[in-house]
Length: 453
Image (cartoon, rainbow, N blue to C red; front, side, top):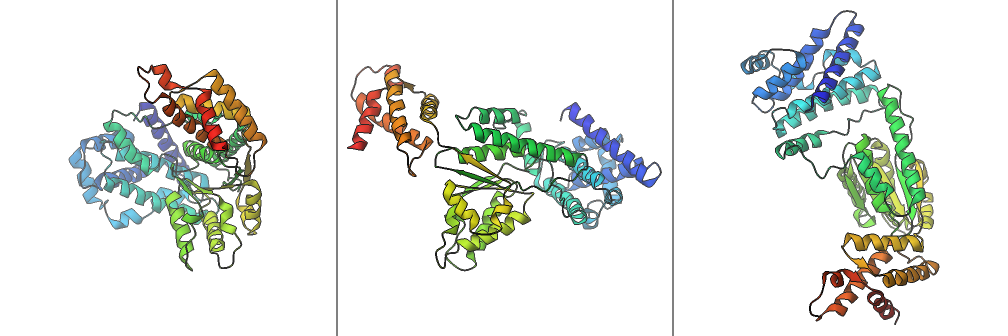
């Protein structure tokens, strides 16, 4: 942990000491320090071992001079590791509970220092992680009961990332798979086309950041649903943007993890009475904390007699409401069919805050997508290949119907060209790297003629 983070948490603890003293009308610094000491000792003892690194951590934060045997004695004498301690509410927290901002701040700070304590010895053992989870659950339950309309969601650096930090420490602190917010926004900006979609995503991001700033300052969030509707034809980037949005929401702290679960009707509707509700529950549980993306959502409302899609929609509505601060549900599909879906149940429209339309790609954008796919596969496109592709995409765009697949059309076009190139090059001796990498109009033309005939 960096010195900057260390000092930040110590400063936040100091603020809580001052707030507690103000509430009590006398200096309560030592009393609250004892509560924090008990909390950290509880986490330290949960795996049955008190390490020197954990003792050093407690000394650093609380300005104590514990030795390992002193902390062990303190834990035993005060019966720290007991069920009674684990389920009781600290005095300071109970004092703060009549103030939403202070009690929220207390939980946030305890969560932050608890996570750092768990990994202080570079060994985030499951017993320690479970104890931290249990302690935070005790506090958040009390908070949620007091403020049911504004339940607390812990910061994005959740217990999962505590375990992740352990792995990162053993690998020298590097996490090459972790993307920064700037990288994610750059990835969004670099998507081909989708100008109006990007504008809408940035609007959502601005809304969430302002909402979270309100919470930080003790001002209640404005009750706006986070669930979304994506409409557009196949291949217009709906799933890609949904995945990116989930990562961005995680990065800004709106969602506690990066779960992304994609499902369609087959994953939610069962063939027997009562089973559909169970299927929907299982899907929700698997996506909780992240994004649930329901593709072709309109298929849940096909209107056929005896169909269980209606049960899926009703269960979906209840789960969306009950878990509104723990999950973002995105439903997607053809524009006209999604309108029918939203009209199939009076409660559907009110559950979604925004509808984002994904337009078809223009012929010029389809060519850019082809270039992107070729580059990603280390292929070159000859000038005549690009000219031929432009003509093909223009014709397909002008004649498009409900079967037009946008980017998928380009993917199929590219893959068919690769197959044709293989036929063209097979048996040829002394192939150069450039020949192996280059796709020509001949490769794509062969495919187009064979399909049309």
